[in-house]
Length: 274
Image (tube, rainbow, N blue to C red; front, side):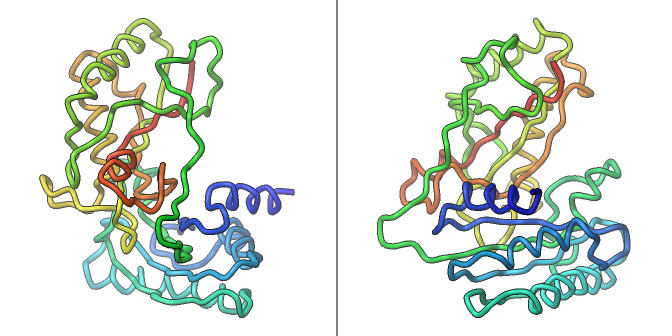
C-alpha cells in the first residue's frame, strides 16, 4: 500500500511530463542505502514512461573537502548502482555526480538539519513540447483559512510573498502579508509553523545560489529570512521551523515567463501545531 501511495503521489506532482526530484538520506559517514531509501528507489524503477534520471550526492559540513567529495560520490554511486539493477530500458541513468558539501539545502545547526544535507537527489526529467508547462495544484491561502478549520501538516500558500531572483529578499508586495502573518501568530500563541522555501529555474542543481551570502542554499535562506523577521518582532523562534526544498514541487514548470519565475520564488507554510 505504501509503495502504491508513493507512486500515486509521484505521478500527481510530476504529471506524466513533469520534472521531479526525489531524495534519499544517509547516516553520518555512511553511503549505505537503508530500507526506506531502497523502497523509494524501487518505486522510481517501476515508472513506465520514458525518463532520464540525474543523480547527485551530497554531504553535511563535517569532514574535509576531499573526504566529503569522496563520500558524496560513494553515495551517488550507491544509488546509481542500485537503480541500474532495477530500471528497464525506458529509464536512462546519467550524471551520477558527487557534489561534496557544496549544495547544502539547510544549515548544520541541528542533527535534523545536518541529516537533510546527507542525501542523494534524483532528478527525473522529460522534455516538454514548445509552450507546454505543468501547473501545480493551487494551495489554500493561509490568510483565507480559519485556524479552527486548519489541520496539522496541511500546507498553505503565502500569497504575494515572492522573492527577488537569487536573493532572500522578498518583493515589496509581501510586506502586508507578512505583517498579517505576524498578527496571526501573536493572536494564536500555540501555533507552530514550518516555512518551506522554494526557488525557480536552476534544474542542474538542487538549490540555487544566494548571491548576497555566496551560499548554495537559497531556498533555505528565503524561509529563514521570514523566520528572522518574525523573531525580531517578538515571535519565539521555537515556534518556527525553516527548511529549504530547492526546486522541489515548482508552482509552475517550466518557467516560460518572468511571471512564472516569480511564482516559483516563494515560501509556503506547513502547520505543525495549533
